Image 1: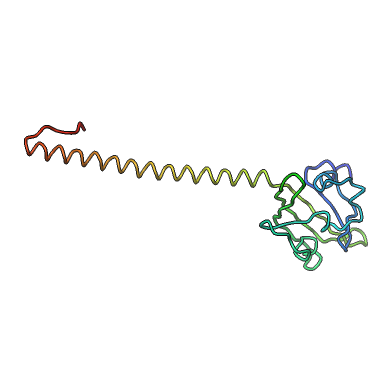
Image 2: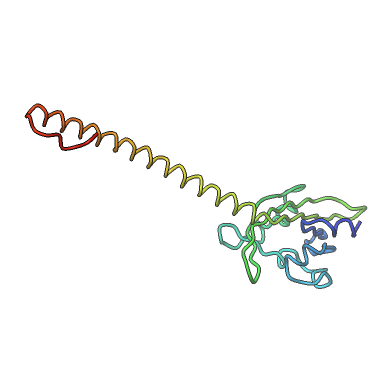
Length: 167
């Protein structure tokens, strides 16, 4: 089982009923920047301090705390800062039993690239819509300028004067 859970891309960690890490796969160790042996027995809230809107998440709002107080599942999107970058994580914490033990299983998926790609796409779509709006405004303006030139030419013709614009 450890081989299979270690082979998936998502970080997986399980804790005891107090929130102390009992097992973690390699992606979790990479995420928190610690060797697997260093995370065992450590409170998950300390290893994985989360943020929302660049504000530190209070310990009672951490998914591990939420699942302990209102089981069985807590999930959401959170920010996590590594020494080198800010990540956007999707966490799902599940309070369950393993034999006679109560455990919390947390699956962590890095959705940073996906979310930032979506945001970039949204911005580009907005820019395109703005350019299309501007194009329609400019086309309307150009049509109005042509109409005015025709009116000026018509008035000049009535006054027996040469046309000023070629339309």
